[in-house]
Image (cartoon, rainbow, N blue to C red):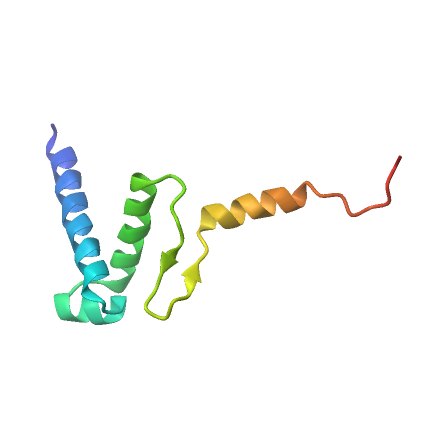
Length: 92
């Protein structure tokens, strides 16, 4: 394994542990990042990247306030389905 591949693996393992720790902490991303000295954008980016690796079509994420985040994949799928609908007069 090359040094770059090893570094990428180490980085992925680090962020996997950090994201899992954040999820179990009950804290907001902002609170967790402040406590751990991490970058908020990095946590969000790695959470998304790791979710895509774990499951190509993940379930919505539930936040502390109970709101669901609609995944980009789901939104794209819905937009594609809507684009196939015809709103013009029937040609039959």
